[in-house]
Amino acid sequence: QVQVVESGGGLVQAGGSLRLSCAASGSIFDINHMGWYRQAPGKQRELVALITSGGGTNYADSVKGRFTISRDNAKNTVHLQMNRLKPEDTAVYYCNTQTVAGNYWGRGTQVTVSS
Image (cartoon, rainbow, N blue to C red):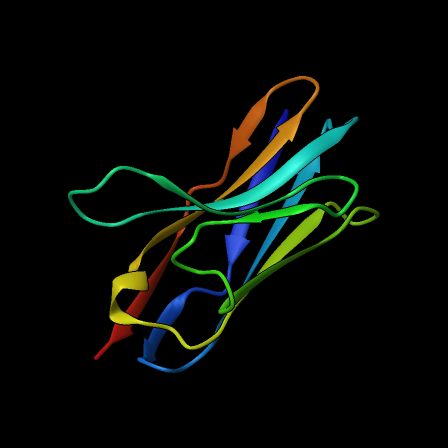
């Protein structure tokens, strides 16, 4: 069994910063991608940022230049540094861990950006 736990969400004013963290634990053998997705009320879940085991990254156009994803392969953790936050970044942010055995999701952490 694999557990994925997010932390670091909260309420911040527009222009502020937050750092999200995610830790994967349990029966993990080979993690491929780790990533962050978000879902705003009434909208579909969307990719925010993805990082491969080799460090390659992919970002949604809406967050490029503001968000930075990083990971520690030894600790099975992934982080999302979010700067210059906007009200439209408000959503529940989910961590995703893709392994050879399957795809695992955390329960999400709320990020609210006030204008």
